Picture: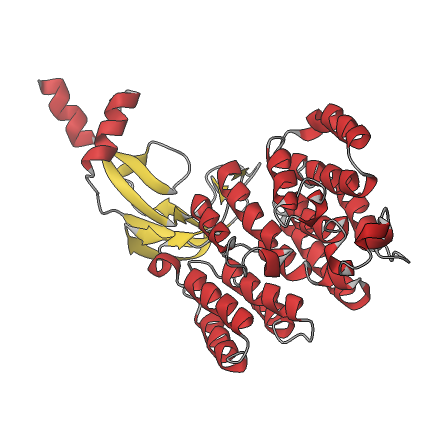
Length: 387
């Protein structure tokens, strides 16, 4: 096997492992990239360097990087990559087994990876994906459903669901399988009724195709993940930050989806699906009693309060997040809200704020487990002065 490194389906995952070392590191990968160009075969080097670039600028919205990746996606090579550097001994081997995975599908995933933190950039990329579906190469088309899923993790928007539902009936089986899997990623943990209905219809449509039916079952499990209490979204802190651990788990599975028949649909490597567990997080807001306001808690005391698990039901408003940057006063941070009592569930684009003035949160972001302290009123202050 040492003579055939490019035939190993896990080789592109080894490249991803190298890229994850430079995740969100900016231009710090330059020295490593130059070394790889001198050591590796040109086809392999172009793939690995593209992995390094997209991982280094993940979530940055770098315009120059997006332009470069769009150029790669729009290429129409005259000859297949398998024809480069082929030995005479390899003539009997199938052509699709000879080439290292092309860098064009990776460039499609890289577009979503670089622009996933911007709402406007995401809309522009979705429009570009429609053009690539119409004019792109087959290897580009099969990666588009996975790229769309990466842009909208746990966000089953109507337009996204319609697009993936259309691609799930594509004549290319790789495109259809990736679209089915993308439906699961896009609706992960949401219990979305529309996606569940589409997946039920697909299970009847593909009942004679075991590979597609397996992907339908996986997508159904993802859609109802944790009975609707979990999410795969790597964003947190009001979508200002990205969890590198969660993003790494998503990238491993999506990279494996570029060669579905040799990874997720094989007998040996289907366990790669378990890597998604690193991206699973609870999507609820639970308030815990943190004592009285004005009393500072040490890190050990705060951890002890969380460990004692003393939930405190409080009124909370949950609605669509509003951008209040640079606005004067105390503007409302949510719109179209509904009032609930904690614990409450939060969708990916939702935001919560306390609906009472009796308590104040210790942190400025209401996600996950939040310590709240009771605000001292006028009666409490008067009683304290008498003492």
